[in-house]
Length: 191
View (cartoon, rainbow, N blue to C red):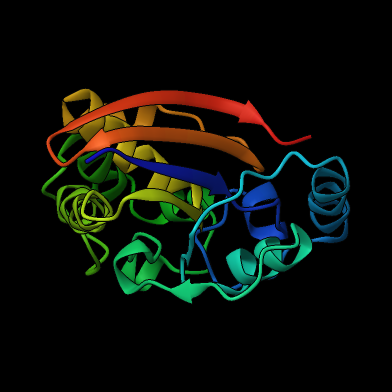
């Protein structure tokens, strides 16, 4: 059985513009406008199931794209950065440079008392493996780090590659295949 999963990265938000660790901020005006433009242009992939990262930004992106009836999926939640949530990377780097360096170098490290990159990759990969049990298409509106984690795992890349994958807002990354054997088509912009 072959499944297709279309990962749509959420529209831009103030937190993303500021390189701030997710703090639940909504999509900004330009992000909503871009998502609506994509919907009007018919650029949004159709699917049988709609999964969402459980964030305000992903819910608003899905609505602006004209996608309805989505299910918040806990396994597709953002990377838990613990006590760094709401701070910018520059702020945390200034206050805890050794901790940030360790976190960026060691995928098993979680100096912020949250989740390690390795644990995060494991969590989102479990949901991808579950998608393999469904015939047809799944559309998932997710945070960029979810796309990064799945790209790393699908390609069998080492976990430090997580930091080398850029995922722009409102792009589609398509995975097709089955558990343990996925093909990747990345970075198609919606607008």
